[in-house]
Length: 122
Image (cartoon, rainbow, N blue to C red; front, side, top):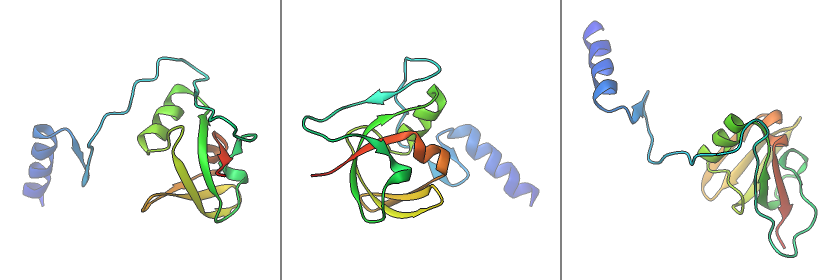
């Protein structure tokens, strides 16, 4: 057991990009704004934006803005939830949402789901 733990610690030190079975392939883009950071893209001809938490199951949406602190915005970007990307609502219960980005599924708590503003795809 101690031998396995020593190996894991040595492996993490020699390869800092691996952490508990996960390998990180890219860096989170730097966000230069502070406190109430937001990232926004407003496509031409788009309707009014609303939080992902208010969407219905099956809806296809485009993310237009990320709200919240710098850390929150970085976390969302790190999960692949960036402005202009298309998502589909898989599940919505009590404000918590599961969204699909291609073949990937991401679960969001109610607080995070409120910070992602989107519009319906036409």
